[in-house]
Length: 110
Image (cartoon, rainbow, N blue to C red; front, side, top):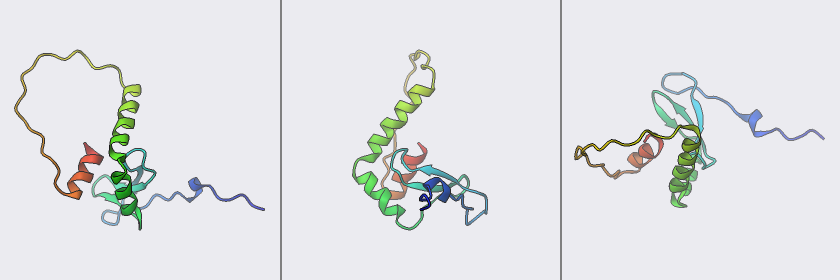
């Protein structure tokens, strides 16, 4: 009886539907298990059912867990930061994302 095919043999790198460049594949939120296709020029492309999986991940608190995992990975891969100098704040305030698109953008690219 032949061995079942591994998931790695099923991996296909797709072309962006807009520019036709090969897109990268990445695990949404670092740990969600939802593999999304990303064009460096045109953003994310989701397959059927992936939006629901992303939503379930976010509703289950995956954002905080993913940020913690990214923080731990960054701490392991980067040298310690230099000592902070006393500098005055510029008064810039962070804008709160109000739409789902803004939320996903901030989650992926901030």
